[in-house]
Length: 184
Image (cartoon, rainbow, N blue to C red; front, top):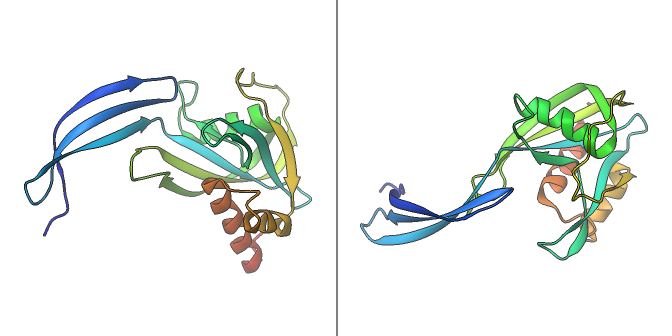
């Protein structure tokens, strides 16, 4: 039996700066009707940036949705300044860390929360980090603090809940895999 749902109609219930919300009326495979609340979000990027000392760059920032400061890898949405996800990754690395790279590698692309959002994120690995020659303007509403941690420290911070962001946890485990394979 097919699991596909057929969208009958949808309506916008909110349009904001970083996301839109719609409610869709759908027909289930068994013929019953239901509604789905869907967050529409621009594509996004995240960067696992590892410096020459084998430390990961993390940004500490306040996140109102969880009412706490979190430690996250540099990240942001792909917007009209960018031709593609690679451009967005370079821009976000500049804005958030004031670093650049000539060694940016795509790791993976994924939906961040398929239960309610279409946000599609691409994770990059950045190495050979150098200070930027031209600083791009930072987002006015961001108050970021740069922190550096080793792989062992990052793994410990995941265990203790100090790193609780999904994309960052994914990046740390990817870094661990690279290290175990001897690829970094």
